[in-house]
Length: 93
Image 1 (cartoon, helix red, strand yellow):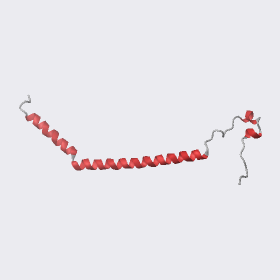
Image 2 (tube, rainbow, N blue to C red):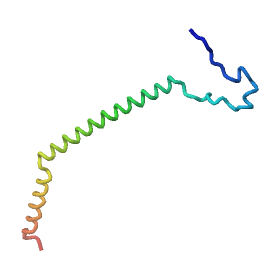
Image 3 (tube, rainbow, N blue to C red):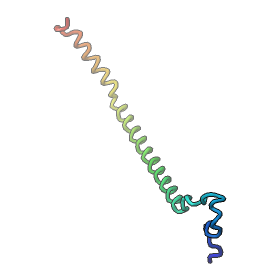
Image 4 (tube, rainbow, N blue to C red):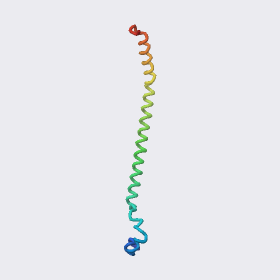
């Protein structure tokens, strides 16, 4: 049941526009648009949080895997091996 119908002030008093200026509420965003934008923002934030968590988990798994393979230790040993081999090489002047 509709008890009151909204009307523009210019419909009831056409000469009032000159006195008060343009209708302040003419450019307001409808509530449905505001709610849709809010839902969109929340869904976007959820996706970003979820993807951030997935990236963090993958990063931790990669670090754990590399640590278990002891890559840095292996690279240090290979570098040391080749530097020693170069020093003892007869072609070294």
